[in-house]
Amino acid sequence: MRSALNPSPRPTARDAIIGAAIRLWSRNPGATFSEVARHAGVGRASLHRHFRTRDDLLTVLAEICIEETNEAVAAAIDQSASASRQLQRMFEAVIPLGDRYSFLYRAEIGDEHTTARYRRQLDRVGTLVGELKAEGAVAADVPTAWVVAQIDQLIWTAWNEVASGRVAAADAANLATRTLLHGLGKEEQP
Amino acid sequence: MRSALNPSPRPTARDAIIGAAIRLWSRNPGATFSEVARHAGVGRASLHRHFRTRDDLLTVLAEICIEETNEAVAAAIDQSASASRQLQRMFEAVIPLGDRYSFLYRAEIGDEHTTARYRRQLDRVGTLVGELKAEGAVAADVPTAWVVAQIDQLIWTAWNEVASGRVAAADAANLATRTLLHGLGKEEQP
DNA sequence: GAGCAATGATACATAAATGTCTCATACGAT
DNA sequence: ATCGTATGAGACATTTATGTATCATTGCTC
Image (cartoon, rainbow over the protein chains, first blue to last red):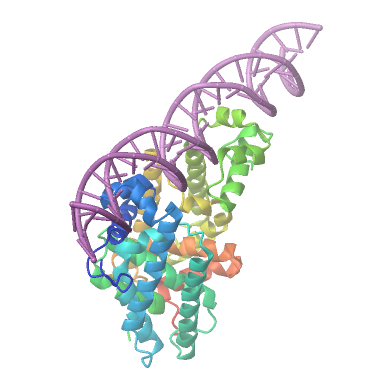
C-alpha cells in the first residue's frame, strides 16, 4: 500500500486503515465505521483521529482513486498514438483498478472538490471521444454524451464481470474496446 | 396509477403511497419513511399499516416494476420476429419505464423471491442472446455473460441519459441496439 | 530514565430512523 | 342514525451509527 501519497518508508496506521476500508467496503459498502476500525486493527477512537468522520474517509479514498487512475492512464497512454489506440490503453489501465475501487461507483460522495475532479475526468473522456470522431473511429452522428456514458459504463461492467469471474481480466479491455467501436455483431474485426 | 394490480375503480391510499414513493425515491433514494408518508398525504402510522416496514414497500415496488416490465416486453415482442428485432423492441418497451423505476437499480432488495424473479429476467435475456448468436447477429466468441451485462447496462445508461436530457427518449432505443450490435464506429448500418 | 506522541479502551452524548401502540375522529355503508 | 373500518396525530420504545472526551498504557526519542 505504499504510494506517492505516503512518502514515509514504513506502512503507517493511516495506510492500514485505507487498505482495510477498501477491502471491507468492496465487499460490503454499508460496513460501519467500527468494522473498518476492527479490520484495520485499530481502535475506533484512533480511526476518528485519522479521519474525523466517515465521509472524510470516503472522500479520501475517492481522491486516492482519482489520483491513481490519472497516474495509471497517463502512464499507459501514448499521446501520439491514434485515439482508438488510446481508448484501448485506457481500458487496459483502468480495468485492473476495479477490484479496489469499484465500490466507489455506488458511493455517494458529497465533497464538491472531489466530484469536480471526477467531472473533469469525464470531460477528458469527452475530449478523447472528440478525437475518436475526428479520426473516424466513432460516427459523428452519435451524441458525444452517449459515447462518454458508454465508456463509463463499460468500465463499470468490466469491473463487475471480472470480479464475478464471468469474464477473464485479460479479455476485458479487448471486449470493452470491441463493444464500443464495433459492437458485438459478427462482422470481421479490422 | 391504475393497473392490473389494483382492480378497484378508485385510487386507493395504497396507490397514493406507491406513486409518492416512486416519485420521491426517484429524486432522493435515501428519503425517509416519514417523507414518503408526507408526500403521499398520509400519516406515518397509516403508511406502516399498508407496508409494515420500509423494506416491505421497497420490495413491493420492485415486484411491480418486474411485473410491469414483463408485461411491457411481452406486449412489444413478436416471438416470430428475428432475435435482433426482438432486442430492439425490448429496448423500446423497457426504456420508457426508466423514469419511474430507475431508482431501483441502486436499491438493495433483500427479498429472496424478488431477487430470484430478477435473476429469471436476466436469464431470459440470456436466452435471447443465445438466439442472437444463433442467427449470427452476435458473434459466437463473445461470452454470453458479457452480452447480457451489456444489455442490462445499456438499459440503465439509456435511463440515465434520457433522464438527464442529454439524449432524446425517442433515440435511446435505436442508440442502444446500434451500440450493442454494431458499436459506435462509423461503418454503414446494414 | 524522562518526556512526548500516539494508541486502545471505554464511557458519554446525541441524533435519527424505525416500528409499535393508543385514542379520538372522520367517513362510508347499511 | 349507527356501527365498523380506516385514518391522523402523537407518544413511546428501541436500535444503531456517529462523534467526542477521558485516561491509563505503550513505545519511541533524546
